[in-house]
Structures are given as structure tokens and as C-alpha cells.
Length: 141
Image (cartoon, rainbow, N blue to C red):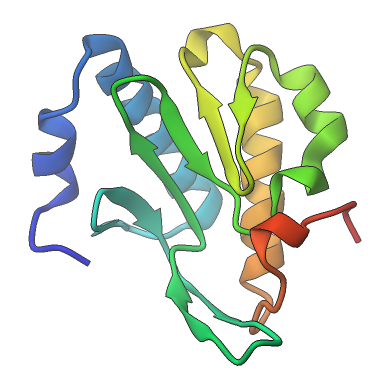
């Protein structure tokens, strides 16, 4: 975590479109999680979950989170992108990483679909100790 507040961090976000999208994500994730946002380095996080992998590695991470980057807003899905193939097909323009969804403009995507994805991910990782790496995310249970 960091000493910087969420408000201080978001005030420095550029371009203006990314700052607008950050305000949208802040409201959405607050509503979905019922948690207050906190800074996890450069990630705006909501709640936390504990993970433990078969390798023995374990730790804590934000249960839901996003990072407004210059190129795109990064939305973190710790249970993996593969879990949401059907929803992502209906989302609108985006790209993905192993556990990250990248959106260049929230006005171009279906926010109801995005909200469903974030809510499902949050629910999955907050039901106890989560043991799956994002890269191992597959189909929904």
C-alpha cells in the first residue's frame, strides 16, 4: 500500500478521458464491493483477498481494482480473463492480459457487462482463500 490517497492519485491522472473513466470505475467498484477504495501502489483497490498457490506462495491482493494508465484503464481480474470469455465477447473494444482487462474508453463498452464481470470476479476471490493463478483462469464454476 502507499501513503498517497486515492483522491491525490486520481487528480494526477492524464489524459482527461482516463480521469473521467477512473471516476466511473471508482463509483462502479465501490457500489459492487461495498468497500472503500485504497491505494495498492498504483492500483486503486477495493477489499482484499488472500491467495495461496500450490507452490506455497501466498499473500494478499485487492479483491477488485483498477489502474488508470496513460494508454488504457487496466481492470484487474484475479480469477483470470478466461473465466469471462462469453461476457468479453459482448463488452466492446478491449484487449486482455493474463489477469488484466484493458479499456481505452469506457464510453465505448457496455458498462452493464463490465459490471457483471467485476462483480463475478470479486465474488469468486472473496469466498475464502483463493488458490488459482490468473493465468490458470478457465471457465466459470
